[in-house]
Length: 174
Image (cartoon, rainbow, N blue to C red):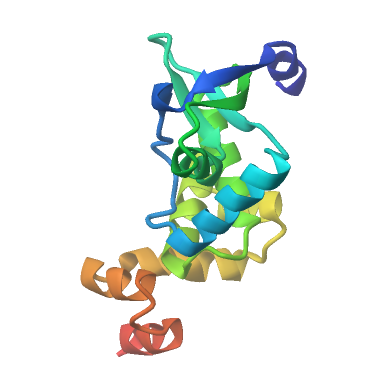
């Protein structure tokens, strides 16, 4: 799989308006101050790494990694962004997105749970396999997935950081 994907990879400038949002992106919100900081960093130092896109069946381009970079480019008024375009299946893209996001430390617990859900689904429901792919304990993954069983209102409060995770989990047990 990697050899085939590497052979079908190319880098080019892509219009930021041409990029379709990743349907498996677990991030629900982006901190505007941090986006502005990223934009300023790009303005002064350039883009350190291209974003990753995959072609869809209709000739469009779907984002796999780099949504914050695209948003920062838009803040700067830039119309094109260096992009790595790599052929992959939607399943491969979903797995890569989940793994990439789970390696970050700035996801909310709900965003993390959504990433684990996607990764577990790409592993045919195998929590152990999903946990292994990101170096996490099975129990940790299972606990995060349980957050998605909470009512949507509670998930929203956790995601908005209005309800601490510990309190939500205590309420869940009652």
